[in-house]
Amino acid sequence: MAAATPRDTLDASLTRIGDDLIGLREIVDKMDHAQDALLVNGTSLQGQVETLSNLIAHMIEVLTPERPEEQGPSLADLLSRLITQQAALAGLMRQTLEIVTRLDPTVSAADGAPANGAGRS
Image (cartoon, rainbow, N blue to C red; front, side, top):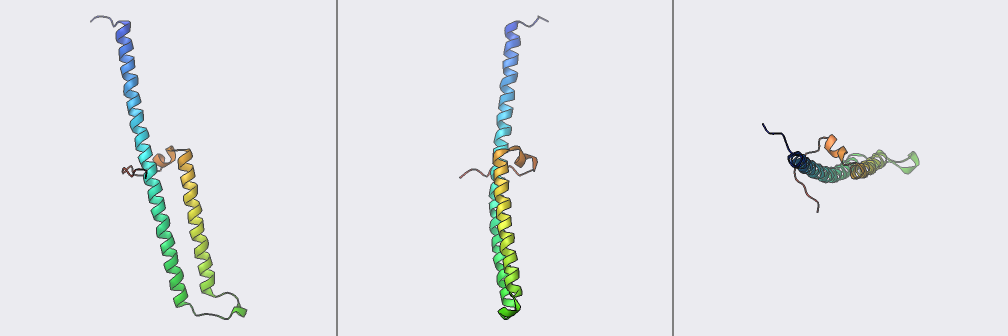
């Protein structure tokens, strides 16, 4: 076998570096798709939580008899307030998740978000 020339060694190193860069780009693309999917799913889930909260609040209003104000707020009022607070908390959690994933894209990949190709709008 002939000894490798410096040119051959350099070409091999450059080829390996090129392949590594292509691999890194593919990983970054997958992470970007995973992050997009996480944000889309989070937004969808937020909408579902809000819809469910509204349905529960309506059900409570229908099933709970009104009580005189001198006895304090009705159960429907208290539960409605609780649901509103929970919906606001879910919104804050979604915003926090968006911020964290924008600051550290590895979070969405580490959480196992599916890279289903949901692209940016």
